[in-house]
Image (cartoon, rainbow over all chains, first blue to last red):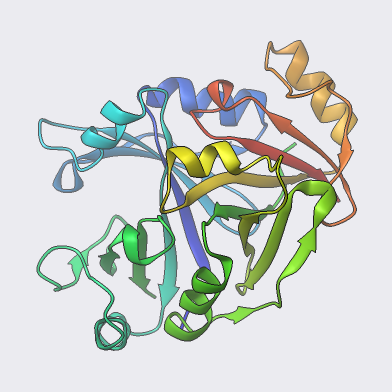
Length: 134
Length: 134
């Protein structure tokens, strides 16, 4: 079921500073910041040869990463996104195994315009997991 | 400077349970557990098409992930490992930029038999970063 690691998301308090570390200090290709108001974040993509790191900064008053940054003011790894062929089939199989899907269980449109679901971290070794249909 | 994402490491309190989630529930290829006493962990490799997830369980009395699991009893993402061509050149460049290398600054032999260094999480957006020479 599990495909590629699409990205690792890192929540950061200062997107410009985090992007500069990856661009200038680590020498990676880094995108321009993109505001995604419907997701409550501004994102910078760090392009690696085999996957991406997404640097996320809160945007607006109701950002889904605000609580994480209150607990982790320096930032930190927020979630892993794995690719799947069929997010509905994946959901049904996971729920049949007793795994919890966050929200109402219906896929939303993710930051890349693809259907995504999030899984409960307590069911996945303490890691918030996003599944993205590709 | 930054090459592939070699792996994402997840510290877990119960390696057998975490491996079962990735193998049976998520349908990934998962290695047998490997005890690495010199690193204070037992590791299971989850093979993804483009990278690896390493599930780490403490081994012995002085495991480098014991403190993390005390703070995060359900487990969680512990570090990211990026590949570099030359870990000494990378270290020198990072230190010249004021970044902190953990330990005595000399590379150690990592879990894959390659030279590795760890970088201070406060200098990298709250993320513990391993550099592995490949």
